[in-house]
Image 1 (cartoon, helix red, strand yellow):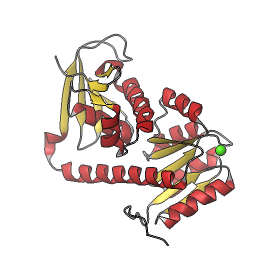
Image 2 (spheres, protein in one colour; image 1 turned 180 degrees about the vertical axis):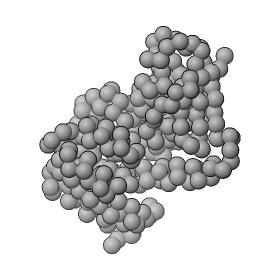
Image 3 (spheres, rainbow, N blue to C red; image 1 turned 120 degrees about the vertical axis):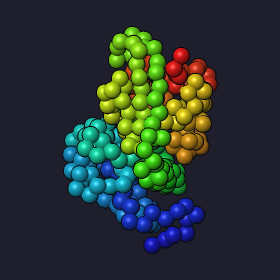
Image 4 (tube, rainbow, N blue to C red; image 1 turned 90 degrees about the vertical axis):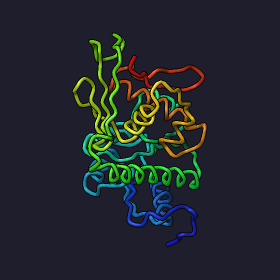
Length: 256
Ligand code: CA
């Protein structure tokens, strides 16, 4: 086992590699093992979902084009059972654009062809983020109500949730979100994005800032990932909470 990398070791963490091309799957798995990860593989949609259920991976590297059903469906089914970070691998830029547009909810996207170095860097960045979330949750548990953020907003009729006024509650210690008292289920990344915006209401954060804070990833090519997640969060909590500042970034609307 080779631990020559300067990145932290993640011995024992399990990465599920979902890829129908055996040589690519094995190359990715071998490189991950060299970095100290354990690996499991699946070559089609249904077995990926089964494997995720049985082995409970810490992260999934997920190819989009798969036999059975595709990576989008795998992502949906797996996340519905147990939240897990997903690095989605797409065939080309146009496909990534389509997925980002759909707001699929993968935590990050990687376009083929990619270097192993790039893949490993993304996996490490996602793992660091998961560790930070776990540490933050551990720290804030037991500190009662100080993990709670509450925001009020005048509703608008464009969002899926109607009838002003609305109250947005973000419980950081329990990682739960409620809109007008009803719980909304966000993925871990969507939750982190919302908290990042909510910590500075009415302050415009650039995509690059959000990428650095939420994804721990500084690379302008990742800004589409931010757009995708903003879209997904809006769909879940109502469109009026997050304002787009064109050419700059996003801001959470604060109480008037
Ligand atoms: Ca494929």
